[in-house]
Every structure is written in structure tokens, then in C-alpha cells.
Image 1 (cartoon, rainbow, N blue to C red):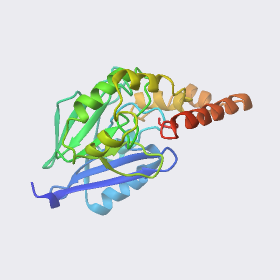
Image 2 (image 1 turned 30 degrees about the vertical axis):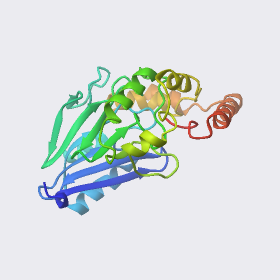
Image 3 (image 1 turned 90 degrees about the vertical axis):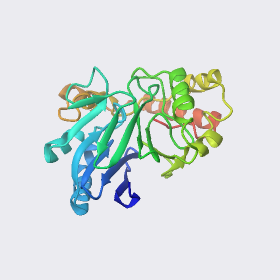
Image 4 (image 1 turned 180 degrees about the vertical axis):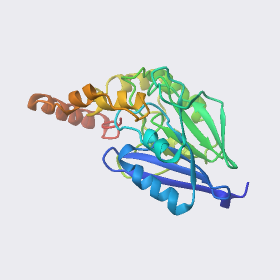
Length: 273
């Protein structure tokens, strides 16, 4: 396929340090958004309009706990299909995917790679064999936490080392988050430089992940139920519980936990979601 027909854009949400990816075949105008954020839907729609693209699919790497997906609103506005990793708790998706499936967007080929561990249901997307969208399974010099939503540290270690690190070294790595302003890495870089995996045994990795002691995402109680409905419906009781602020003592404990982890793990283990 001529490379010039493959359009790739990376968008950022500053509140949650989340990346959304726009992928399209410029020749056909078919497009897909991966991990859209509700508050950024207008930006995404404007980009589609400016570039003359038709949104076919909204893809999720996993059920997010830190932001509400924009997929439901985008579906309402464009008629796009919402596609998620196979997960029995998600009820409003048009389709679900498992590892090993192929999605064609015009002439752009998106391969799914099952990457559970951060959450029980998680998929990375390999686009045209060159661009790997890793979600929260693999970050630039880090990885997603494994202490809720069915996460499992041993499982994450296995899928990263056996399914992602076996891809060619020049495969570009595009994560769902970065908290330090970094935008892209490669598989080769992460194999050599990622402090959670480089020269770490499986048991060492599990020990690291089981001792992070991070506080839960601030809006998790509202976000997770909303994302189970693909952002189409936000249960009122979740909003009510999310708006109740932490006590001063709880806030101090959160700050102490973050500070302790920063000291122990040299800050690159501190704040990953």
C-alpha cells in the first residue's frame, strides 16, 4: 500500500494525560479513532471535518478508569460503530474483538493483539505492521497498574514480553498515556530501557507491581460504569459518589503514598494509571 494514503494523528487530553489516535486511509476517507475522550469529542469531530474523513469505527484498548470515553457521543454524531475488547460488562458496544482479528479501514490494516494484565480485557492494535497502539499494557518507560479491574501482574509481564517484545525492534510504540510529555517510543527502546521489564524476571516484576500502593483514579466510581455503557449513559449514583470530595486526612495519605513511591521507584513508577 502506498504509504502516502496512511494518515496517522496523535491527540492529547491534558487533564488525564490520555492519547487518542486518528487513523485513516486518505484515499477512501475511511477513519477510526482509538481511545477517544468525552471532553475532546468536538476537537475530534473538527479534525475529521477538516481532513474530509468519515469516521467508521471507535475502538477502545480497554475499559478506562480515569476518563469517560467519547465513543458513544461520536457514534451519535457520525454513525460510527463502537468496538471494544471482548468484555461481558460492556453492554452498549456494536461489536467486540479478541486477539488475532483483523480490521480493515480502507486499505489500512489493524491487527488485534490480546494484552490482558492491566485489566482483564485489553487489546493492543498493530497498524500496518509499523504502529503499535499499546493502550495501558505498555507505556514509554513504564506500564499500566495491575491492582484492579481484573488486572494481574504476572499476566501483564507475559503478554508484554511474549507478544509485544517479540515484534520487530523498529515497531513504533504509541501508548494510551504519558505523564512526562513523551509521544512515541519503539519496541527496541522499551526492551532495553523500560525499567519495569529490562533485566527483570517475572517474579521481580510481580513484586514491583504489587508494591506500588497507588491511590485509585479520582473519578473511577463514575467513569467505569459510564464506560460500561460506552459513554452513552452515566448512572446518577456514580456521579453523586464521585463528587464527594476526599477528607483532608485521605488527601494527606494519597500525597504521602505518591511521595513514598517516588522515592522508592525513582519517579518512573509513581503515577501510572
